[in-house]
Image 1 (spheres, helix red, strand yellow):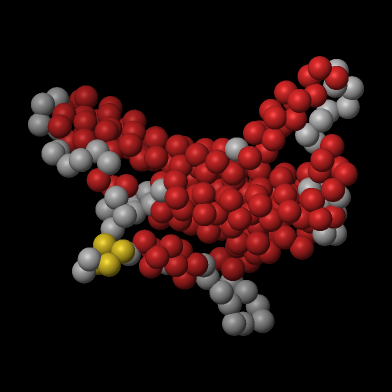
Image 2 (image 1 turned 180 degrees about the vertical axis):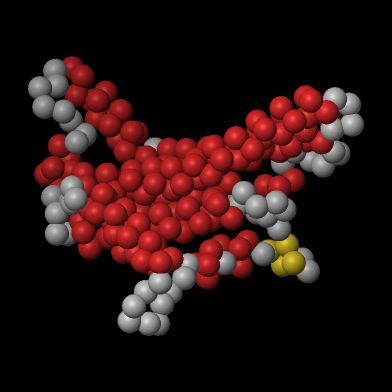
Length: 226
């Protein structure tokens, strides 16, 4: 009960060494692989989900954009598994760290923007000035569009961090409330515990949705620049 509310967001250490790198490398180990010609139901379901997600994101892309398909599918799987593992008790969620989310968002955004300037520089520059803009507003609109372009990776990272952090804090508060009410009022405890279960189900959905939203926005940035 006296635990710091933000203690679960502190990067863990093992013998004084940061363990975040090991935690980040752990989710890929949970993805099953098959060495047989005929896959089992788990592998088949996994491949169907990957194919469905890839088709959903790659439909709007041209040939050059579809070269990013492996990276985008790997990204959504990594974020989803990391978010889900963070819901386990006494676990650490790397996606609650803004620094890590920025480390994912900035290179992907920069790669898409650089690709746009290299392949379609006229179209890329045209985004800074909408067609039909009055002459007096041109300098202001160029500044606004430049700022909106530069804050895209920050918006990606902050959105993921805020949604995952808010859910964890809410679960922590309701869990502490359930524990405190267990010795005071049993019917109220059952109601709060039911709310906690429903919130946990909601957080599972949020973990998957945020992984999809993050990857989809990267895919949209890529589409605008290819």
